[in-house]
Length: 335
Image 1 (tube, helix red, strand yellow):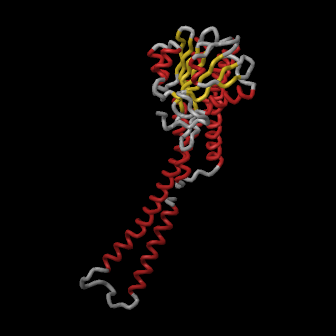
Image 2 (cartoon, one colour):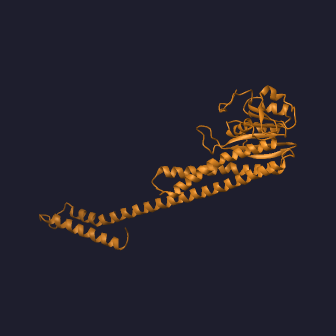
Image 3 (cartoon, rainbow, N blue to C red):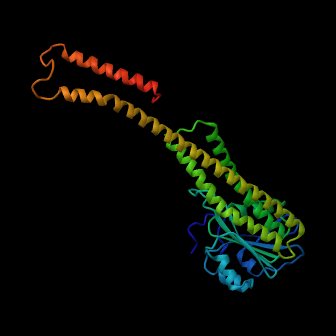
């Protein structure tokens, strides 16, 4: 049964999402699942690339039976253990990489994993959720200007994966610049939510991009001999770009933190100002309430109880007291 998250732009052929046989000149021909199971190179430079859905039953058994992949490695390639890593196993390269999730309804920080196994002649990529990166490389091959061997195929996949990361990081940078250029309103919930979103995305992306940086370094350092020198130079460029993106994430995260601290400081200042104003009002009305309560007692002997002008006299006294207090508070700079 096919995983419900399957959303590739092609029909599923067994566990195969699509397959290509590289001709060594930048082009490739399509290959189906039945032919792929018995594929043998017919001319020099051919490389088999199969992009598969790892949740289809039987994929793990096929990896072990057809490709002689050890059971622990086959389990890793088909499991949900998606932390980026890479290692050499004999003449094969095994890796788990993660890319940005651009599927509808998904957040960019919900990154999608892609498992990779390659022995120099056969490259197997596996995924659970639809990922655009393999389709970008497939399009280049179909146009006749794609990778020419297994090493350049791996570098092409990593380059496209990092390119898509750059779009999200640039969006985060632009969002930060917009917030810094505008007047931050501490009462604007949309602004506060945007700052929180930026911080959350930065933390989530860095969580996977940092180990991915280590995985790419392991590929560059420990890949078998079929991963040629020019491939190592290409992967080194990808590593450098990824390192810059990780640094950009740190800067964006720190900028969002500064903005958040600024909002909190303004909020505290506004609250303190409001409390100060309330304290002034309460202080002004305190003696007035005392006078009103004293004169409002229902007892004999209240002065001027029968004087028709007594009310206005009390009002004038209260106004004088309030005015004097206002002048005093102004002189003390309480408001």
